[in-house]
Amino acid sequence: MIKTNIKKYRQMKGFTQQELANIVNVRRETIVFLEKGKYNPSLKLAMLIAEALNTPIEELFKLEK
Amino acid sequence: MIKTNIKKYRQMKGFTQQELANIVNVRRETIVFLEKGKYNPSLKLAMLIAEALNTPIEELFKLEK
DNA sequence: CACATATGTTATATAATTCTAACATAAAGT
DNA sequence: ACTTTATGTTAGAATTATATAACATATGTG
Image (cartoon, rainbow over all chains, first blue to last red):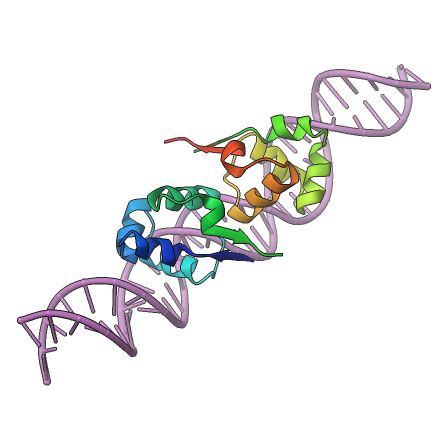
C-alpha cells in the first residue's frame, strides 16, 4: 500500500484537482483516485506530480509495509 | 521516457537480476525490462528497488522530457 | 567439451493503471 | 432559488505493467 499526501501539497500550492491534472497530463479522476490511495501511480506520473508540487517524491508518497 | 541505472547499482551491491527480483518480489524478466528501459515501473516497485539497492529513487531513475 | 550460471528475448495471459463519459453532491456567490 | 466551481463516484474501454514459460546466448569452470 502507498500512503500519499498529494492533497495537502496540492492545496498548499493552491491548485485544483483539474489544474494539477492538466499540468501532469492526466484526467482529474486520476488525481482523485491517487489522493484517495486507490491505486499506485506509475513512477513517471509520481515524478511529474512531485515536480508540479515542488515536493520530493519521498515526502509525497510513503510505502507502508 | 525514464532513464535508469538500476544495473549499475545492482552490480555495485553484487546482486544478480534473480536476487534483486526475489528481494522485491517480481520476476527476473521484469528486472531485465526495467534495466533496459522497456517500461516504467510502478512507484511501489521503484521504491522497493531503491530500498533494496540503498539508493535514492531520484538517483536510480531520471525523467527525460 | 560439457555443464552451470547469468543475462537477454519472445509470446501470451493476467492484473492494474489510466481514460472517458456521465452523474452526484456540496459549497459559494448572485 | 439558480448557477458555478470543486470534488467525489461509478462503469466500461483502452493501455501498460507484470507474470509466466520457454528458448537463446554468452561466459566461466570442471
